[in-house]
Image (tube, rainbow, N blue to C red; front, side, top):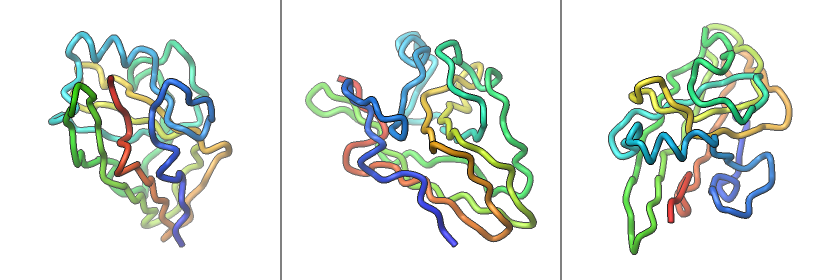
Length: 155
């Protein structure tokens, strides 16, 4: 049984986004990007699952209380494209399917993207499902990243 977390059109960071189901960048990401802590073209991006409500002070993975990942498939995200055209940078990530295997996976509401290769596992942004989700053994959940618009753009 597959449960879709997000629709493709909800994964674009734009200045006018206000929906909580949309991708929300972590405020500290902008500074970390400007200070060279991220190389989004080659660094390993991962997802972190949590019930910790977002807070403007969250900057690194250690700021979150993650769920136990027992019985959950790999959380590595594949970067499809990291490039700029005409002065606009776009990061495109391959969709990720998470699967519970060998037992249930703890409930989570927020799906964070973070840079596993950055000095302190800097956070990039998050999605809010709106309510907690528990995966039973054998269930999957699809994180459907936006192939056309990218997960984030920098202009």
